Length: 157
Image 1 (tube, rainbow, N blue to C red):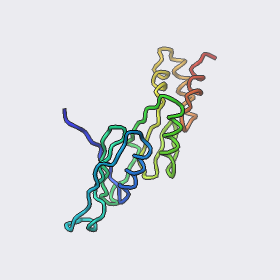
Image 2 (cartoon, one colour):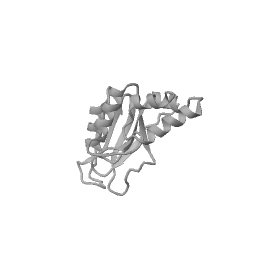
Image 3 (tube, rainbow, N blue to C red):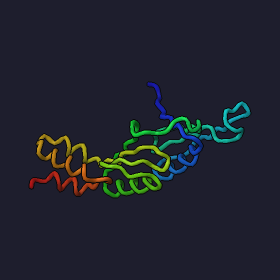
Image 4 (cartoon, rainbow, N blue to C red):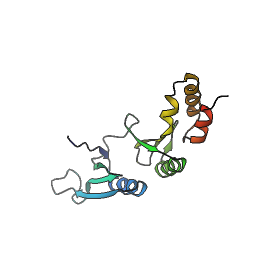
């Protein structure tokens, strides 16, 4: 089976981003830093790529220049079993970035993340359409998702 490694295009901050991400997620590390040589196109010795893993998932950060920027069209979901996990990832990843609606945020590097309690799909996919709708309405009022509030919305009125 082929291995898939997401490649994240940065201007110059790929190494700083990789250092930040590996400090946030358990079982994470930077495995390799490659630098531009005399052929360029960027100054010799500057960081070209950073190979890193987040909780076992491999990534590559490429310092490719300012031509491209991240958008919400691509995001990474972080599935959290507890509110403590939601709070941790929300706090660490939104620091210096931008909080969005419904558990979405942009980090300081412009990468979009979804911090999702594992209970959310369960509640939204409940066979009771009224329960599901109450949970959805509650979620739409939140930035960081709150598990207790989602469960309360699921409870009959």
